[in-house]
Length: 145
Image (tube, rainbow, N blue to C red; front, side, top):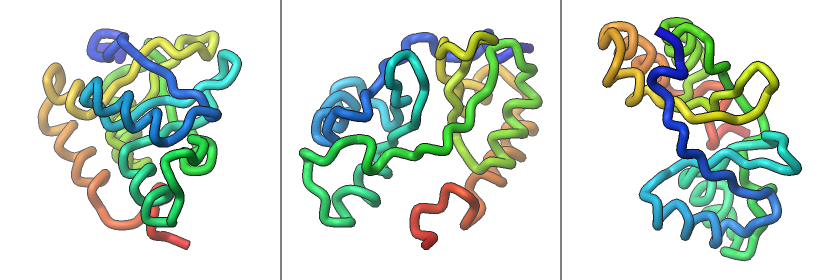
């Protein structure tokens, strides 16, 4: 099974120039906790509700802070034609719950989450990936110096 079969295609991009207040309102209105960040048709980062809280509010930054100051710049992604087993395993290795999905021209075409995979794929594979995702630490640990 390929990622394109389970991904969400309804993707909304944040701009690195938008404020974290604006993006937080967009997230709240859509009941989402993650948005890819794009600049001139290029994926430049990702922002989560946790980024806003930990890198923004907890660090004393206000709602007018640009997204670029709190977003994750190290973008991990997958391709729409990749096998779901490979992508789910890669999520575990990278300790992330979601990936932007790109086509082979590196254009954003969707988002895939472990939840998407769990609904359509082998629960054992997804469970193993989730166990790795929730391990403390890793490259995306926001409390690391």
